[in-house]
Image (cartoon, rainbow over all chains, first blue to last red; front, side):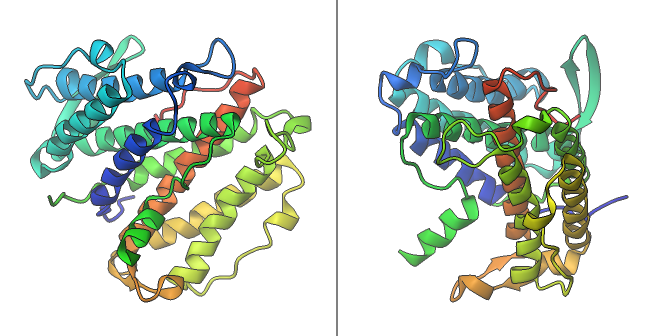
Length: 162
Length: 151
């Protein structure tokens, strides 16, 4: 079955704004905290989000742009925020192009390579962002740190009331 | 910047299938578990996903369908799975209709309005966010769970 396409990317962009704001809710100590030793801490989750975006852009979409040294540059909160912005800007070029979205890509996954459409890839990237923002919010909850509701529509409506 | 629309609803549908399968990973005696007293438990999160979908369809889209009393009816895991499926099917009727997606809705947001596409985004964001809650809780409980991504 086919469904109408969804005009949602401008709101997705706000998830990245949320993640950038969330960085500042952690201090330099608890950004390295995780509830159990085998779980990622907030810094690790944020680095993973940035690496995922750059990795897909370079290795799968093959946009021919160089990847920064994310692990080195993401060691400070300022560095993390800057890399979140930069990786979103790179992704925006992909999700902003109807031609790139309509193309098919080879995606390596668990010893196999599958062909996925750009739309499918975009869904995976969106899912990745929202999932890991949810994890960050979960860590904030466990630390007892107050945070805004992770709700992009509510966020937009609040902006309109200012 | 303007962006082309995304053809992703079929993938979202599979995400719902994964969410339903995730219920089976929760031990029956952990449905009421949460890591802190002030945080929702697993049953509450899953019921909230289903009620959230019904609320948007009733309150904002005003699709004319009746919302079931989900909170009263989720005693067993099978009840949760049934309500997740039924609420998804209701969302899908909305997501399948280009006219409803293109409509501007006001309802509780007056004087501001949001399009059906925004409502769709919110629904997807809500599903993924609360699925992350479930994964987070299962990990805290030391319970193995499937891969996070949607196949």
